[in-house]
Image 1 (cartoon, rainbow, N blue to C red):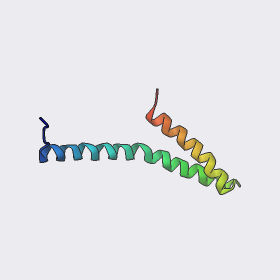
Image 2: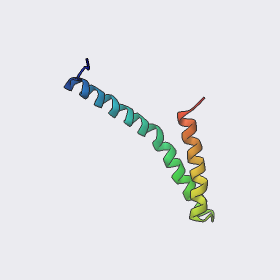
Image 3: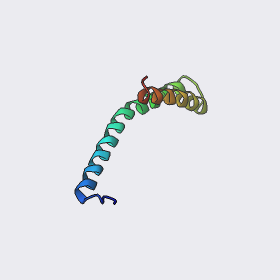
Image 4: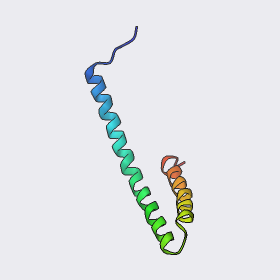
Length: 71
């Protein structure tokens, strides 16, 4: 016999999911901001936009791994 969620259950689940998404946003925003700064700095130093983007992409992937897999 399946249990049908009530409107209160669904509202609670939406609240939990919204809270988790806000927490995720708070965690990754500084990482993306730093990546934008690194890309701008590299471009200012004479790197081509493509090269700067490639460097930042590698850096960003590593930072995301560390942020979500600290072990």
